[in-house]
Length: 349
Figure 1: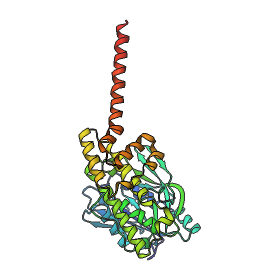
Figure 2: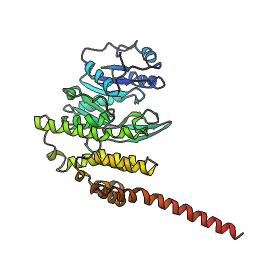
Figure 3: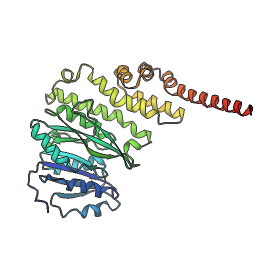
Figure 4: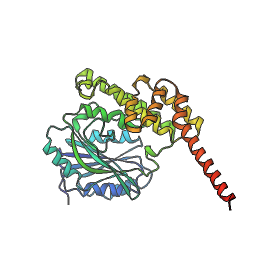
């Protein structure tokens, strides 16, 4: 039997659960098996319409676990409810269809003991596709941490005056980088501890609804606004001295242009729809000069960088031809040539 939770536990684990009856058992078992007892587990049942609530009830005998039922409000609303109730010095977010490695809290606690000034700890995560797990190693670096809230441990004080935005997708992007640059002495735990289920149809990254992607620039600019306000108020040290003179352009390139224009456009098969999508996404940039082709080149090569320069200077159709139409023409030419060779061979027999 677990020991009773104190009024001020070391950790608060906040679980957002909505229609996850197939996975919530794995999630909760992974949390309750950890030997670290100085924690509370708050499950926010966000208006589930399946058997999620009943499955959660099977674990309420453990004094560490409590459940809050609320009408469906989305992931941000569920997390914010958990933050309001949290009593722990540190907060860890877990989605109800994901799970942690068994010793996660023990290892996080050891990292805090080694880094007592740390307000935030970054660790790695697995992307889970069925039985396959792809490890991703992250570090306490603005450009190497990923924007997910789930591969980080946060000091509760970081949420003073800060909550997840409701009503938008990419709510992590709108808040997590701000929390990171606000944190004192972020630390890295070089371990892969979080299991992120990526093969669910409900996953934002699996969505083929292009309308949702338009929240990407909304979230990025909201994050920038928070950072600028934090700098002005003195809560955040000057960003340029910490992350470089061009940090803002780099941020917009990495967070909007690469995923929103270069990557997502490739998933749209219809040419006209793809061109319309790119035109709208490019219109969301306040300043096209923020697109950094050198960053694209280092990650993806010269062709993608050249296309990026064309987008930057407003030559969308030419950029589309270079990045999309030339590839389609190459595949067509290869198919035609292969068919021609096959017919020639057949004609020789």
